[in-house]
Length: 214
Ligand code: MG
Image 1 (cartoon, rainbow, N blue to C red):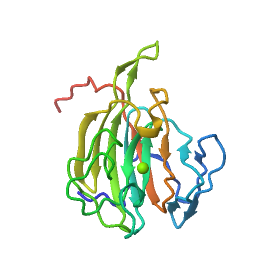
Image 2 (image 1 turned 60 degrees about the horizontal axis):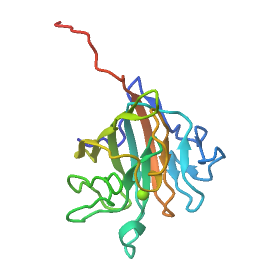
Image 3 (image 1 turned 180 degrees about the horizontal axis):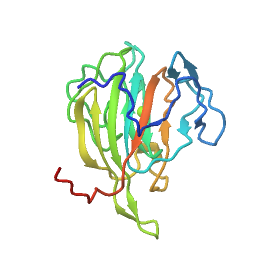
Image 4 (image 1 turned 30 degrees about the vertical axis):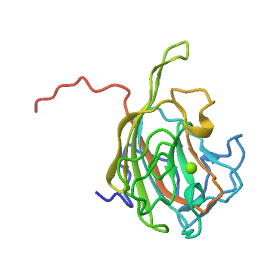
């Protein structure tokens, strides 16, 4: 199922208005220097990550991204960015097109924790879609994690993470305290990655107990 250009359902929150970054900040609360043009967010390398002003708990996220074509680059230098759920758990964005067996650093990985099940990447300069469901960690009043976060990810319509349980915050975020609700953070990894059509549907924290036999 190709979700490119998916229209947000009525209960979705628009996370990017297509015009500006008015609901995004720098990590320390300043005005981001990333550019918006024709409904597309462009990373401006070396200006830092951007962070959503809204916090999300459990949610479904749709986001589209495009990696630059860097034929000479390899590994983590090849069109790198990332989508940090709760600002802590990086879903890798990278040009991993054509890699036979993608690893824990490749596109679709939870960085350094879980490699994608298959390589569903499209070529660089092609728009790609992530459709993600995220179940936030459950914390005790003490702040201790009672249940770790879980996620399922579709990349370009193929399932690449199936309800995995995260070990904790990934990579550079591993020393940051876990939260029960948090923003998205998009990574500046010095590459000209673009994003568009970003929205989320907040999900109830428990299943419904209504039985309707129709
Ligand atoms: Mg990254």
